[in-house]
Image (cartoon, rainbow, N blue to C red; front, side):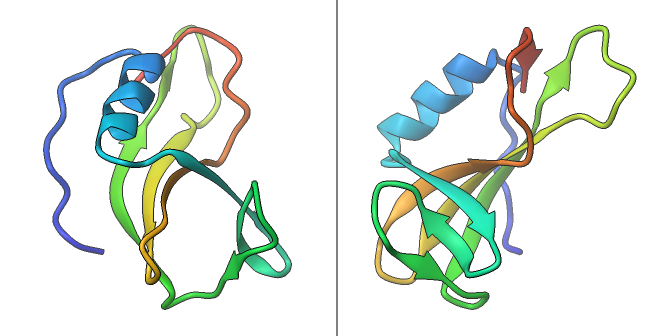
Length: 93
């Protein structure tokens, strides 16, 4: 992974809005076929994308592992986000 920029603690929505202004507008999921761009039939294999930034989402009053939010860029120029958990409570990143 490359160098990540330091980002102040913000709400999850603010993090997503900031990423959106940087062009991270797509949403990804991972399944047995690879990294899936959710609004298409496009899948990416390792080496076809990079993690541009990584955020740990602090979930208040949680005793479990904190979810992660990944800013991802694909080799063909798609920018989007991936989270390893459903974020439904009050979070900060």
